[in-house]
Length: 218
Image 1: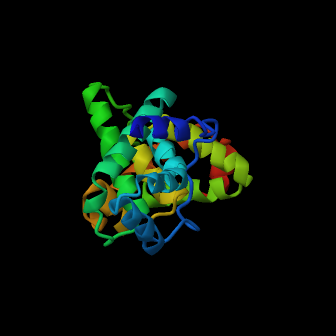
Image 2: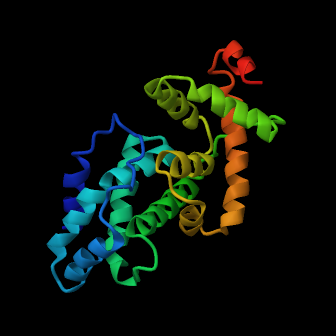
Image 3: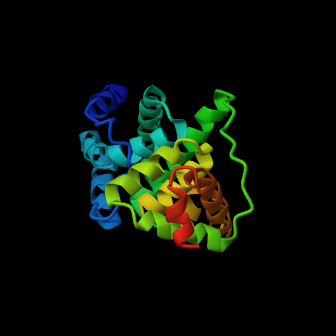
């Protein structure tokens, strides 16, 4: 029953748009809690409201990490099934979207491990913080659509964990504290991992931009 429900909803996702859906403007945790209470009181049909609201968020993160449409759809459904089964464990001490992110993130990691898939590796060049900021400045000069596409293309070449981290921070604009809750480490450690991920992205991006554009900001 639940799988059928999720299949119906995920068949409606525009899989050509894999950018993360911003959590800004979504229902607040308090508003979500009203729906959660209805579900826990026996109104299981109300769960479709949560699926409809967060299906884009869940699918996009799964797509970024797994880089495969079919697997992303399967993991998205698995994630919502886990959310439904564990709904009573949500205590409201964080945003509901953060909780769903964490379930999805861990489900993706489980899928990668079960497939024994080798993660992409990217050699980190010895970039300084100045070099990374230089790339940021150069990117800022591109048209928004062009910049977004360039970053999306490069993200696909990163390991799943780096891709997820950069997506959560830059595309969904989550705070370090929120990301820390999702991946289960301290905020300070997120900051360190984020900088390393940005250095990996810089390694790839430098080959995507015209050299003269980068040199202009050195």
